[in-house]
Image: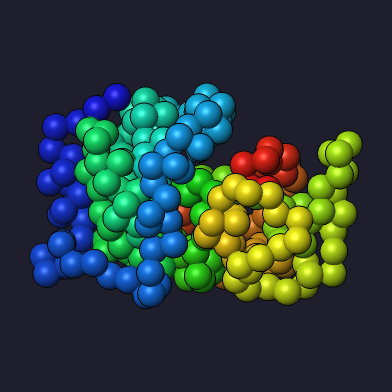
Amino acid sequence: MPAAKGTVQDMLSCCRSPSLRYRRLMTMTHARYDGYADWYDDFNAPFADANAVELADILGPGHGLCLDLGCGTGHNLDAIAATGRNVVGLDFSADQLRIASRRPYPFSRADAARLPFKDQAFRTVVAMWISTDVDDFAAVLRETARVLTPGGTFVFWGVHPCFNGPHIERGDDETRIIHRTYREAGWHTESPWWGHNIRRKVGMRHVPLAQFLNAFIAAGSPRAGGDPGAVRHSDPGHPDLTHNFTEVVPSRWA
């Protein structure tokens, strides 16, 4: 679904100030996915397609601006736009955005921990699989809460930190052995149990579960409960931080 007329101008008017409209605000030293965009676009497409219906169902019908935070090559943009939202893609990798820009949506290249948008700019923010790629997940969540409107919706979809990461050894029968390296939070460039997919190429940041959940709480989510697969609240004075944890991740991240 193409972006609605005026969406680009709407995005630019959301920036903190005119001087920031075209500025690249980045704290990371380099874009790890640069150089892999063509490979990644082919590799990730079937996984994104498989998740599209469920993502649209989690979002439900909506309107207004929606930020796809860490949009990569743009695989989820059509699914988000199909819900009625005017989607804006953001990524740190110029190489990824080179491919994403073939789609009819506005884009911004920026660091997710320093979003170039004013407060309460978006009714919805979607973040797919980003917790293992960003340098400071807590900072990203704080920025997400800042740019969401009161009563807005945040959908997070990512790996469960207990069952995916450099500490996990997968068995042939789908069992998973959790090694003591689970305690080693931070950036990992190697793991003896990784295959030859994306993690071998770019590494990953491991955020243990307590640190992961505390990042949501610190960002302003007032409560957590109910369905263990999701956390929702509807306080009209706060963003609606809705996160969906996908534990069973195929060899995509192996």
